[in-house]
Image (cartoon, rainbow, N blue to C red):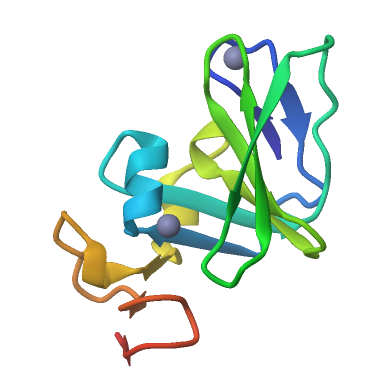
Amino acid sequence: MEGRCQCSQVRFTTPLPKPLKMYICHCTECRHQSSSTYGMTAIFPTFDIPAPSPGQIGVYTRPTESGRQLDCLFCTNCGSRLLHRPRGGETVSVKAGCLLALDKAMLQDAVHIWCKEAVVEIPAGVVRWDGEPGGGSFSL
Ligand SMILES: [Zn+2]
Ligand SMILES: [Zn+2]
């Protein structure tokens, strides 16, 4: 899939034609990161985004709850967040709004996570987790 930041100076291609998984994350970190109500993430096998010019891609690094370091790549011109990569991880979280072909069909199968911190209503009938996927209470 093709992706770009808001100003289009950073463009990238994902290593697969569609994501392995889509998550809509309602955690407080994602709310502040996106400056919005929730974060949307498309999981892909790990890859890098080459900077089109020196300094075009910035990296904000923060520790995760599990104690890993998470590198968060962003465009230094427009500030769009591009992807999050846990160090030593096999997958990356592409910020789904960057993807040109993002559409309703892709979002139909999205899993809602960290619903206990949600500030919006969770749609009926979706797969949801109170916290991390795989833990907490699972319901449909
Ligand atoms: Zn940009
Ligand atoms: Zn989150």
